[in-house]
Picture 1 (cartoon, one colour):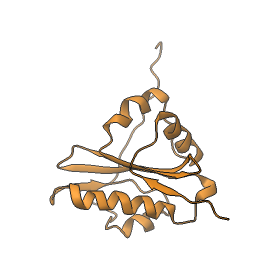
Picture 2 (tube, rainbow, N blue to C red):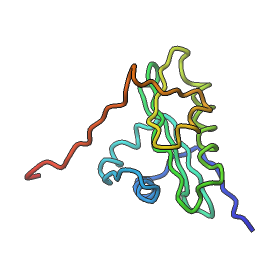
Picture 3 (cartoon, helix red, strand yellow):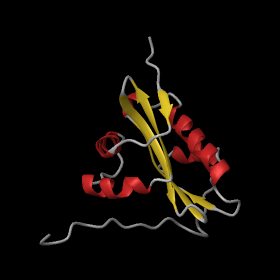
Length: 142
């Protein structure tokens, strides 16, 4: 019998967030970074199976002009079952109701995930614009 996966409109707590990012092969985040950042979530969802968080996704931004879809993750043992699409359906539905008509919505697509995101209207913008990033490294002596 296949276990039921429930989508809940609540983002995981710090421990589940850090655990799920690591399980999904995403860049690790410190507990302190997660503790500071997660309360700034505009909207987030979790996928739960038998009380365990097996997927997540959230939207961050300024609530008016700019929104960014982040932290789309599904535990490896649950991938390939359309759960990423369930997460995106919920996030997209929230954006359709809450984002201003002129809002700019972005995300960074890793690998083949761009095919999923294109179904929601996301388009590649290179070479006109490119994603740029850097990761803050630990400070010396502190």
